[in-house]
Image 1 (tube, one colour):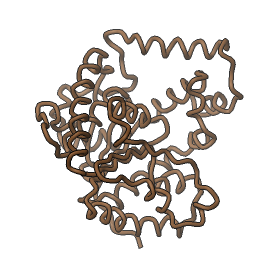
Image 2 (cartoon, one colour):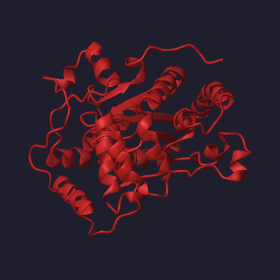
Image 3 (cartoon, helix red, strand yellow):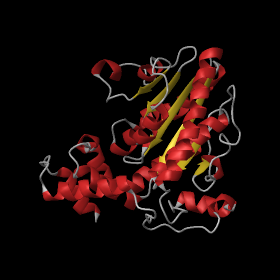
Length: 324
């Protein structure tokens, strides 16, 4: 399906539950829920041994949004891995409650990249008293008159707490930059301030983890099409989503500038390939368990994630000069 066709579908008014297109979309969702033993990933370029991917191949696969597996992870394997990883996340939360440690995890990425689904799996068994999700709407009139970071800082964690940001202050480096919601001086000021802010966050004792979910252009279009045909998912499609369809290149440029200018040793960017949402979820959970210190950590589970799915941005992109 072309960009123009997807735009037409997304711009239609909400459809009824008995719409033929909706029935087709819901049937597709049902088939995915059943999930046969082998589900092919369209446009993948599978590697013989993804776990032993060479650095130059890894960089190309991440830069060009090439997926290294031919098939979706099987449900049985996914559920088994998810269970043991969620046990590790429970250990992490319990340990943080005891020690008073604090953590912020940022979930960034293009629209329909799988951020929300991954967040739900993180939160599935966590105690909501010491773990919460922050998903802010567009700034209010009052917030527009405040320091840009102010509305985010008010949600920072207290002792023993984990806060997950479903999109974050990096809106200014992404959607605001591409869609013209902020000025060029605002963008440059943000790029000067963000390293100072994040160093202060880390210096204060908060663990800061920045995750970027990377979806291919064709897979994003497939997900937009699915959402437009499902009444339970239509809320996920905004006017900005529709407008972003024609701005893939601009978002790519903004993303790469963000990686080059805001990847810091104390708070690096971690890129997670998400054309297979389930594989992305377990690798995101594994990465967080791997980089965090906590009591009772099982290193047979909380080891490094799949290198063909997860990479630090500095392993993919060359560092750039500070913005003036």
